[in-house]
Image (cartoon, rainbow, N blue to C red):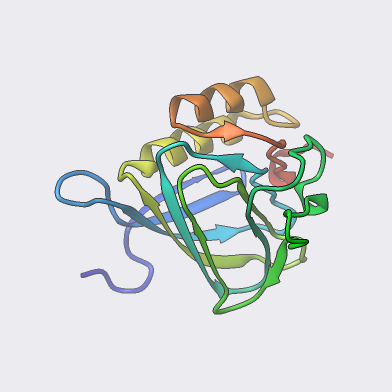
Length: 171
């Protein structure tokens, strides 16, 4: 049991996640409360083996989970599924379930932070988030795209469009 606000905080360069249920035996998933800052875009990506679940608690996010007609490397907001589906602009109560192999993305297009409950399988996603936070913290200007691609490759994440993190951009 954890009271509100409790858990291991993983933060850096605009990323802020509180680990609520850590991975490892017997956990089959890692569960987090994540604050998504304004302008943050995780970039479209896919996991060969992992599954994820997002539940919007506060704020608004653009959400995507489908195979597009064409995987373009530009803005995933332009993607369209074979049935004509586009991304969902979702608020509190919106759910995004991502099965293995499904391209997905989320971004915060608003001027206010959003808060989501995030669950990832297999467990251990906190290790990836800790390494990503360190990369974002160390970034001077834009994050090192090659370093992020390599990090994601090691954690079964195939990056399809770029991660955008305005919190780490020097103006």
